[in-house]
Length: 330
Image (tube, rainbow, N blue to C red; front, side, top):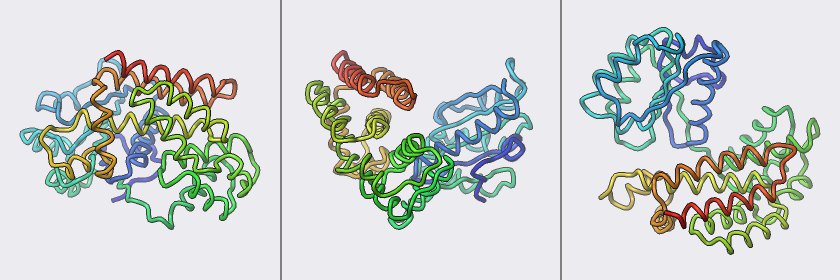
């Protein structure tokens, strides 16, 4: 069954939340909502994360064992499709009788791999599935309107259409744009004019041009693209969102199994085949450690540009220098 968008602790503790679907942004929101519910219940609750590929019978046993730090825990297991065959029975057995003080979140990355495990988990009454379906083109303006409402703001239907046209159909970028508009015009209706003022001229394309150049290690080009984007009115949050997307693509490529067919690899990475070629070439300049540091730097920059006291231009220039430096120092 579908899980509630704002779960309570009672909805997740002593239960298993199964997160499936292709919309990674919505999946991450589900994970964050479960963690928030657990922390609201007990602010000292222990939060942990692991990969399904690392789950063994021993680590499964630890799920129900008392914690040294807190009686309440939230455990997120990512990459359920990579769960070792010998651990499937143990996970299903645990999921049938979950520990009362543990909120277990299982995240499946999509695709047919691991479908047998999903089938067995879905049959359990203790499992709540939160499935994110891909949005149809006609549904993106509604997503924008819902985002604005969540911030206590309202957007005209024509303005929601204009925002989708300007930013594109990336949910993370649309959410960032809605957040920016709601913060800059608190309590005021968002009109088409305001959308065009902030996001005119294909802001999404400008943002990705900055990120692409940075992940190639082309420092001078990335800085020029950044200045052009900011001078053209591109919102800083769209730039950090584009960087986050670039980092995710490289990280997924680096962690993908070797020897896969190109179509399968594109699905694994979560990009169309034409984009895969770009990511493959970019990834040659990155290591696992370098991309992990890049992800942390991007998260910090995103938090900084959303802060009222931040000099967004300086923050983004520093991010470009950091990313290009990490690639060059491999």
